[in-house]
Image (cartoon, rainbow, N blue to C red):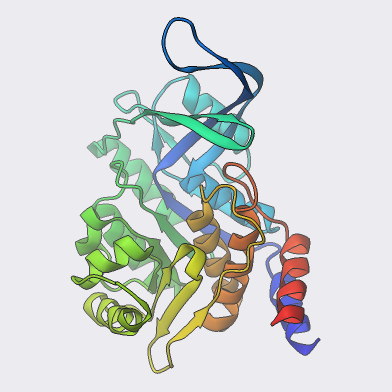
Length: 325
């Protein structure tokens, strides 16, 4: 009960906190329907559409997770001057600082889902261009916003570059707040000196410069990544294997996955980095923050598509986890 009370205390501090989420803003579109026959035109299923909806993806989903937890996600990125950007603005009304640029094109991922199974995904890759005027607008927002933490959600779509990373790291240093990066291999050189990194297994192997074949490889990889990038901590999200983490001056720890049934891992990494950073921003220890992030991820993978959790859902899952373990 004492541990659950501690997690409840951490969650109670979320309200009113502000976290800047910078990165690749994506519009996730979902088409839900039923498959009852094969097309006579080609050997492909015919989907009878029942529902269409749009959700925030990429950095947008991270910010949505922050909002859902009762805090304020300040979303900053670049989108085009198009109908998809307008839809993002409709979905994210508060704390929307997305720069709309006529020379860029909004990133869109459309998923066709039948009976809770994804049939196909159609990507409309964005053309994100950080010209001088766009950089000036980004710089102004980074300087002006008063936030308690910074998240960089890097999907390697063009929004993250050396200049922006330098601005974000300087802002975090000046304010004394955590800056946590959900990384991509092509930008590893940009992350040195951030507070923490949250790669998945594949990304971690590339960052460590060696394969991670089993449990025995985790500790060396974690230490190597943390030292190589000069971070306070590094954690590796391992899917069904849970989360492993290393922090300066502390022992490595591993937390198992707690999902009851996995339907869709889309956006699970977004949830992890959102909950983790918000918990750190309100003063939790790393192990506490990882435990909450792990619990939150166990909820969203039980749902179809990108989704978020409330503090109540998070504490209910933590209570279940603590009871069983």
